[in-house]
Length: 321
Length: 281
Image (cartoon, rainbow over all chains, first blue to last red; front, side):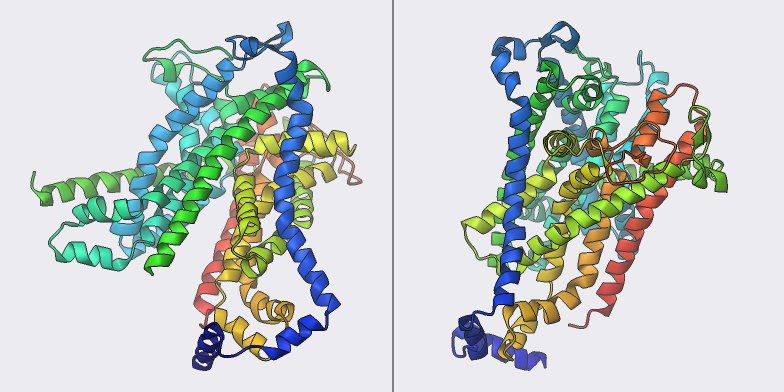
């Protein structure tokens, strides 16, 4: 049956046969068919509208931020909304410190775990480890935040930090939230490297590690990059866990070795913590939406770059296999 | 160092890294299980909170999460499957398709708190729905849309091209082919995507903060325009906002939420592995 299908497919693709029944149906203007097709197309295209709508509503509520507050003050160092100071800089720095910390932790760990799963682990270990990592992806962020708050923060305080609620605590929790994304996309990228590459390198006398380092990693570069980008995107947008464990202090930490161990406040946590207390239509309310615009634009940029990488990965794979 | 030594060292480090990733996951799950088990009782699961939430159960929060998850599925499943069919079956290789793909990637990447802002601006205020189950479901539904769309698209794409060619060669129209030859085989994969997407929605806190979640409502919601409690927000509230909360109730709530979400994940992966075994092409 499959053979017959193969033959039909080949001839169809070569243009040797046409499906008369099909084209006739189109000519008959089958209304039901047309209606369903329109619905399906509508559903597809609506995704573009939804992104547009989200941006539109953020701008609608957040625009006064950028009109009413002088840019100089907006990038100032003081975030005291009750006294009319809306400097976003401490919040941006807070988000950057926590995200950078989580990237430093999660990227090496994630890539190495992906290499372990894809290249080193025997099948029985893979059967156990993969569901576990899927499980980590499934744990709600609030539960991880809860563990950070109940267990990790006291632990870090015991290690000698003045408080357990620090940028480092947030970075650690965020790293584990970004890990499943990084691991699964990177592992897919490693898997997509043709088997011939491995066999070729090993046949020439390379060790397994030389094969991984010199052949497989370079060949899967864009896929790995995509995993890292999406992981960063996930980390920068995380809210609840970060709000619970970073201490929420809206000032710029003094530069020094103890930066990771000082409390910070991220953009996301600021929105979540303060939106409940502002009156709608006030400037403070508008500024919180303004922060939303900044977040939207940052993640939009990151994901658009990652989206480009997807195109590259697919094209390359298509060329090779 | 000899290449063989480097090899041994590298494998050692990589194995250690994998252990560092996996062990905390196991520890966290065991910790919540052990500390939360004690709180779980019939009363905890079926009664409303009492005495400033320090006694009684968490039933309104459990029910609220179930209602919100159902609402989410009503909002997003038709749209997500439509978009998936479009991308897998109808979309040509053109600029519009690239835009739709870009939109889906970006929808998946928008922070959940930004969805919350959008829900507040669009549904609660602009559409005047108020903080209500319907506003919360719409917000969560849009957030879940890209997750389900991309898994469903993959499931539809995995159906061999021969099915379509043969069906159309027998005179079936495009939609008849999709409806009778493609979708039936893709259903398990689509179902996996739906369950995974919903399990994420059930555990989310940020999108419901300003759109539906209530600090404390002992009564069950009577209509779609009521507020409701929800498990993730309830966990946040009792962990950080209520002083003197008994530990067992906190861990118990975390355990119930974790079990709810992980059992959905488990069902999804069971469907997936069964589907892989049954596949006959």
